[in-house]
Length: 115
Image: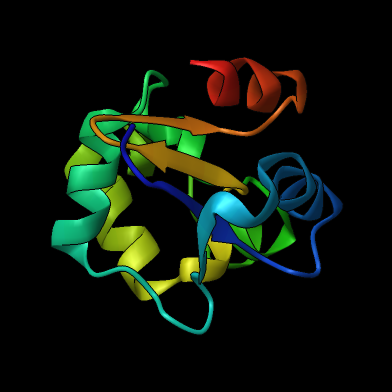
């Protein structure tokens, strides 16, 4: 079985829950300390079952940047944005082989880990 990687933010309760569920078998990447570049983000987006825009948090920072939904429609737009502003990435993200999910809601985590 391919290695499990979790893109993790230790300040996020959902992200900590993903780590707990995965146990010691996961490779943990704190994406705020080790940001992904555009190529890595495009690769990640190609593995997600969700639309590219699902990887972007629509929080206060998103609004402060003046962003709109039309700014995050394509994988390329999302990759460019998240490479520049990694804190806008939704978390946790679990990656195994050619598959990846956003671990929200948390019931997605268990289902992914059972595959």
